[in-house]
Image (cartoon, rainbow, N blue to C red):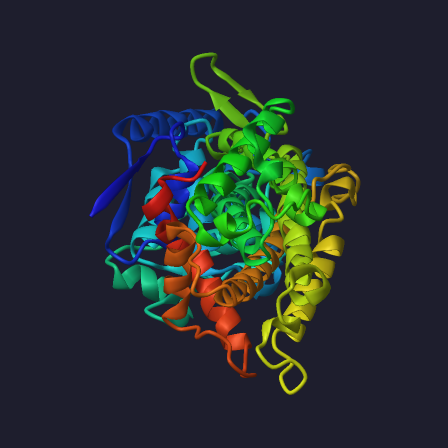
Length: 512
């Protein structure tokens, strides 16, 4: 069993993905000893504030617009329970198991930094939830991404105190049952515990981190798609000459051009028409490095910003032990990741946009010299006509999903929280765009692997032939009309789980 140690400082996107998608009992999360020590000291500092009785926000006061209300010492535990109960206002379908595990991991990592004054028992139980596949039921909607992701995180905190619902052993049950089934007890909240559990950007950051991993796979698959389509329509590689890209040296553009050249290298189909006199292709084939490269640049920026957020302390107020100070600030505000997730959605949508155009070129015999809609007997058979229509629908849907959520702000809490990020909305839309783009690339792979079949007995490159062989395990060459949605779903799964990428990389090494 692999162990991932959290300390508040070293969590990575890869760690989050590994924990979120791990099978039970294959990855274990643990607190570092240093984190434990820092958390004990921070909690003792909170208790000292309570003993002194001086009002400090979030410890012995009300919250938000009620921060001027001083709470008696004997009511501080009830204050935290009331906070959690009242903030459980999420609506909509629950987040997936993977997203919820990522949220819990990120919240535990933030609290492990030792600036929050939370009881260590709460963080330990949060980690036990991850390790034992106890998944709180967390509705997707209800956060404006400003005072932390209050509503969704409250549903997790409610599960920790034994009052919420979780999915455990494949069934939805009361959390107190699941907690006791693993030999633990629900958390008893003390001063500041409830606020510390819900005040932060864990939901936004989890959505961003998992989106990064999915997009890293997609940008490479997009290059594979482009190379295969280029060979399928007997396009030219002139536009991929390194001399061209050296004059516009965006790193993403250069990487994409290198990938396409490597993937298609050695193709007999390419060699068969190298002297045909074809000067240039449509933009969707000729400008792949420039478009895919720009999408890669959005990914690079998103990875940088979200990478910082993963180990940021996003609670409020924060406890600085060495300075003997408690400071109230705004690290819970999600503007940075909200904006970057909106930006990344645009980058992913462009992969979908240009893929749909390449699919259209394969449908059109005027351009491709292939049978109409890639079926041997057009007319009697419609072939992949409506597969292209589906790609067009997905592409169109992504266009409205790319309207940035982060440009909106609805003031809340009697205007105390008067500017918000809408970061969870940005993240949820981003995941929809990624899902649509994955399906769109799957449709292109259904089409371009069929296009290659019309050039037999000529072979494409070893990498592309390996790609086709993987797809042919369950998706036969098209001889006549059949139900195609199953083919699309199968190829989508191969894209999503990385199998097609690994198949190509067996022949060309790691793609850039």
